[in-house]
Amino acid sequence: MKTILTAGILIFLLFLSSCENQTTNENNLQNKFSLKIKDSVSINIFADPLFSDVSKNGEKILFLDWASEEYITIDRDGKILGRFSKSEDLPDNPGFLYRLPAIRNSEEIVLYGMNGIFYFDPNGRLIRKQKSPAPSNAGIMAGLVGRNIKIVEAHDEEFLVFNTFRNFDSYPGEEVYYEKFKGIEMVKIGKDTSYNIGQIPDSSIFRNGMAYYSSDYDPVAHIENEKFYLAFAGEPVLYRYTLNPDFSLGPDTAINLDVKKHLPIEGFPLNEFAKGSVTFRGDISAIRQIETYGNNIIINYSPGIPQQEVDEVKEQYPDDFQLGYRKLREKYYAQILVIDKETLKQKANLKFPKNASVEGFIVNNEGLWFQRKENFNEEEDFVRFYLYDLVND
Image (tube, rainbow, N blue to C red; front, side, top):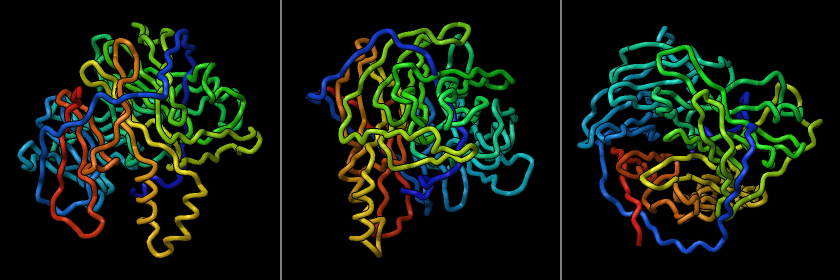
């Protein structure tokens, strides 16, 4: 796991809509689904890749090379269609990245960083720039699992969707912060119009009068067909709302998720949190992504690792902590939850494919895309991505 999971400063977000109906998934799932490989795409290149996006039609794949700080776009044959870096001090440098880049209309690469929202062609020519809806000089690095820019359509308009940096004139050591918190920004593409939505419901554990780290309630969202799907990292509940024409949220349903090895989130007394100091933790139970594929809602869930076991691994592997940590991650494995879009019943809880890294996961119209698992024993001069389908056994 890359160093992007280390603690950082983040000004955070939350959501407050109430949910009228509730669906419970019993913890006795009999998985009748599996993942079947459909395709793979390879490129001969020496890189330290982080899978960023796939175009909706699957013709273009985008990844970020950490080593060279390049954004590289390839086709299904592994041919490089464009590559560029914006690490120099130039007017079109987005600055510190808040989200992983996205592909828009198969033609534009969208970067969102400290200096705003930038649209480039695959070779780095600036097409246009857009202001951030909530400028900030602090944030979590884009590489955290699931922190992709989403490009969606709602009420006949196109939007970017990502987490906000608003502080709501409060901070996580005040109870009112969790009442005001709205965690998601919907930004109209090419326009200085945005909607800040997604409050923490009254029923959420994050409304219990305690204080929480930013990572505990890190919001995750998805929008499709005027339905707004929302979750807060450490709470295994999916909230579904109706997205009204005025971009308010109509009460809908809360779905309790069947997850494995969940490590409950613990709050702290409010007075233990100082203003201006917020911690982001990477090893907690968290919903990382919400996607849709066909008639299914797809959720990327990562269980937490008990601190006691992390400390034990440090003692057992004093010279190679990463090896011990990888063994822990095999025990507390990432999961793909499958929920029926109509009935809201959970169909399956699946492990990631054995050949797939948990650091790269994209869903498009073709299926579920994964980045090849890193080879820790030797360096490789190629990058590979896999396309899987969800099949009913």
